[in-house]
Amino acid sequence: PDYAKVVCRCETVTEAEIREAIRRPVGARTIDGIKRRTRAGMGRCQAGFCTPRTVQILSEELHISPLEVTKFGGNSKLLQSYLFTKGEDDHAQR
Image (cartoon, rainbow, N blue to C red; front, side):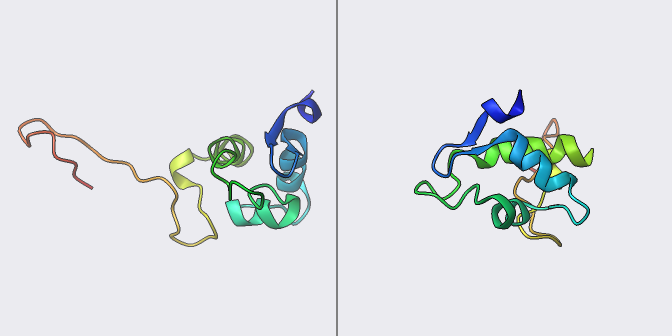
């Protein structure tokens, strides 16, 4: 079960707690929303270890791409996509 899967080791927050925070009537939609509701990311590592899994869970629950997950809403994207085109010496283009 998801209650046995610890996502944030510093604050001992499980995957089930994060999923519940998203599914609530006024659920979390951002990394900071998860942080406020569960304390995931507030520990000693300051979200260094739990952010990738939290992004993945938000992506799954909200049915969006991980690239669309934001830190606090608006245009605060955590991940940026880079398109590589031939003939450009493999320089990243946005």
